Amino acid sequence: MSGRKKALLKGGAEQRYDKRRADRRKMWKAAKITVATLIAAAFAILFLMPIVLTITNSFMSSSEISANYGSVFATNSTGGKVYIAEKVNLKFIPDMVSFSQYITVLFKSPEYLLKFWNSVFLVGPIVVFQLIVATLASYGFARYQGKLRQIIFFSYIILMLMPYQVTLVPNYLVSDWLNILDTYKAIWLPGIFSPFAVYLLTKFMRRIPTSVIEAAQIDGAGEWQIYRKICMPLCKGAICSAAILVFIDYWNMVEQPLILLKDADSHPLSVFLSKINQGEIGLAFAVATIYMVPSLLIFLYGEEYLVEGITYQGGIKG
Image (cartoon, rainbow, N blue to C red):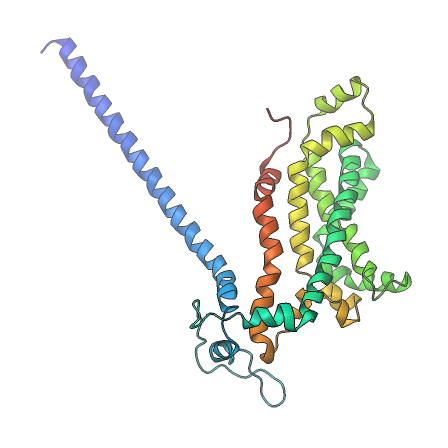
């Protein structure tokens, strides 16, 4: 056999070997993607089960809900919880669809809608004004250097890492000193000056290329123009991300209203959901479903901005 034929056979064998190796890599990659997808799907189902259970159970009648979950909320003669001797029946499909819970919540008991609007009046100003304060403070932290800036920003981080329960007593004392206790201002002011949005937006603004700001300064732009026409458009995704996270955080607050608002009529709907009793199990499912709607709508509307705000690394996008 000539040397040319041997070379051709050797080259063909190497090609077949490379092809088999590439096929094995593709199969292994496809297997890993399949396993990861199945694991993600399993976790998604686990996380969605409580939401689906709440929505479907809100269409059950009171008698059906009591029959399925009455033992969970049963109490003894002294008001304490009793031992659950039997398994709880988790039902995702009601025997008969009933809108009685929603009729009670929306028409027969206006106190629930009142508490819903209390939540809106409490959370709305916090989200709007916290973002205004955060964008201005973040611009200052991102634009200027110095030891004082580092000390103040480090203080912001320390405050952000503290759970709200740690600062609840100081907030109560300050609110009492300012004579705003038992008013919405006692919740608005700590929320508006919360450090979370400042930290998030500062980290984002620092990624804006310095060359962009220097070019604007050469063109005669002042600080206000740089803030309004360069930083704000580039930080749109981060601002939306902060707005979504801040809204969800304060939409679910419980401790602040309980401590700072003595009048129960001023409490948000989240406080009611934390005080479920045996006679209101069915209403709790309906109210929880209604209470989830704003958070779900905001998340679905701002999902793209949320992902962009977390993954965007700064700079000018073409």
